[in-house]
Length: 145
Image 1 (cartoon, rainbow, N blue to C red):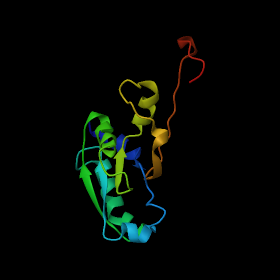
Image 2 (image 1 turned 90 degrees about the vertical axis):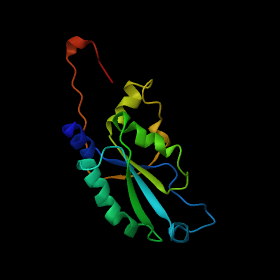
Image 3 (image 1 turned 45 degrees about the vertical axis):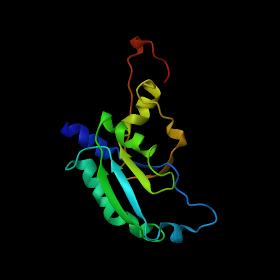
Image 4 (image 1 turned 30 degrees about the vertical axis):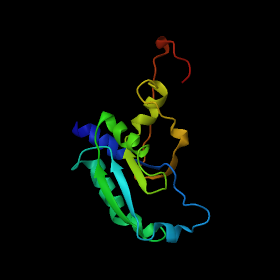
């Protein structure tokens, strides 16, 4: 479990469903006085949580209006629970999820389990590099992904 947490921490992606305020309102006045939430898909105390707390500490200074930032751990279903929480939160750019990038692959390879189209998400960044490599034996019959 500890290595899974470390892997997820290394694969951190932050997503935002609707990152922009309405056109009639500038970003500074929209975010001023608000609290943004980072939903962390893994339990407290691990590497992913440490990354989220690091982002929490500095993220507000880089957003017009300097909103306060809180982190909430919501582990479950291989971090899928944290992504699904985006669908129930406000759709105004005040909720961000921190989850394992393995869900991106699973959305393609196991669409019955991960029923999400990650192309609909607005990506705002990642904390670390994540390089994915897939090897197949030629005897497997797989010729392309």
